[in-house]
Amino acid sequence: MKARKSLYLICCVISLFCLPKSTVWAGERKPKITAPEGWPEQIGTRKLFPSDCGFIYASSKSSMAKVGKIVRKVINDLDEQSAKTAAKGLVLVIDRKETLPFQAENLLTMLARRQSEKEGQDSKKALEALQDGKKEMEELGLEMNLLLSVAPMPIEPNLLPEVMKEFPKGVSQQIDWCITMPTDSNIKYGMKKMFAAGLKKEGVGIAKRVALFPVLAYAENKAIGELKKARQLALFQFIIEQQDHLTDKQKQDKVRAYEERL
Image (tube, rainbow, N blue to C red):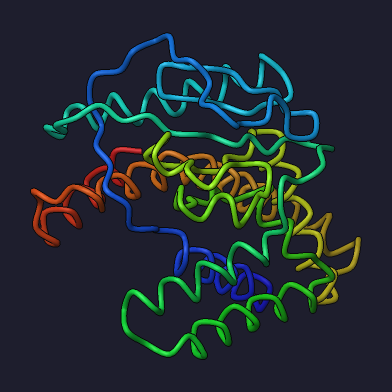
């Protein structure tokens, strides 16, 4: 279906720009960490919680605990990969019915330009790919901000003050990594919205949807399950990419092996 192709293009756009390049290591962690100087106590309804992986902004202890469990699992898995030095990061939890901490398009545009600069290439092609993704979403009747509901987005700490003015310019000296993570309920909400938009665009009526319900339900649940796993994979890959003692092939092999485990 064209709708499925459209969703694939959208995911490709995210993957192009969501692997920033800052040195970071996993390893031994300390459970009690003081909040860094200059950080906001709240971002919208999200409160700052310390965790054994660093810090988490979440609107509730329940959301914080669930996302923290995911991050701890990734960090523990990284420990098995002979990581060398402790690192602490920041997780921005994206839950249902919350004001977004930033606009998805602004971040992706910034990452597209930054990645092109690092690779010594003109950012024109990267920005065109981003606009193609945006156009695909608009044709489905969706906003780019919906991507924050379904996909994790790594952010270079030194870019964080540009993305979110609440953070001090020296934040890159306070954390080693940063990532947004949608909650399970938000992934389910976002994916259902995308599926419904795709079916509507393809002109699949109510009667046909009822007839295809078992197939559609399976495809939708499969996609939701894969997006839940994507949170772990994105953080794992982000950190593995920074392991300077590994060759490119070793990094690729570790990421591939981890993806197969999920």
